[in-house]
Image (tube, rainbow, N blue to C red; front, side, top):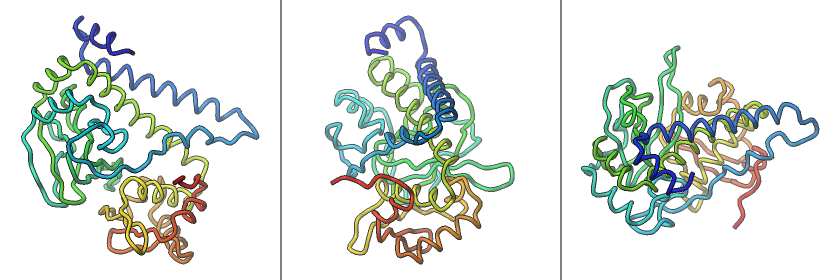
Length: 294
């Protein structure tokens, strides 16, 4: 959909959430086509198309151009004028690590625009465990679905390090989308990309063992949330082994064994809720990932 079409649909009374759902449905349809094509392609690499979602790490931004924000985040997608207008909407807050900014199940509708920091998105499972769904960084927008459809929160968002963010009222955000149809289009694209990434990860996990899955997840986190130090790349996200197990789609005991093997091979070191990657190329090879270029 072009920006002109988005603007016309908004003027005609089509709600932003309807546009987002259409984009999400398109992503789901694409994923279903991908699943069907993979089932009937003997001799072909089943995951040849999955590598395209891998993103390059971009340093944490301040206010500036699109290139100053991590790739794929909502702020990176916006034009400078839309970004400035969005910054003016919210009330800024600064919190320490371990603070909950969105509670699963709560009937609240504000949005959270992350400006700097790192958060994890989790959800409760029926058996009492907690599933790690995603990590969000400065530039990301969270809580948008409840803000637009009025439903209870579907997940909890917790800070993993000191974080600065803005709290935006839903009525102000909806007016922002009407005044900036290009931003409505980018919001739909963001939701679509998140759904596509989730679906492709499920497909990815059907073709690899636990050891490869753990290596792939750690390598991805290393590039997107790691910081380079002399002795390796440190992923100082506060993750428990059960959370790592849920994002890898494996049992906790299996993940524990995989981590032990990766440690014995000198690929990673683990500390209290922290992972240091000593040999990223070796870890990528273990996870059957293409090495980073440059």
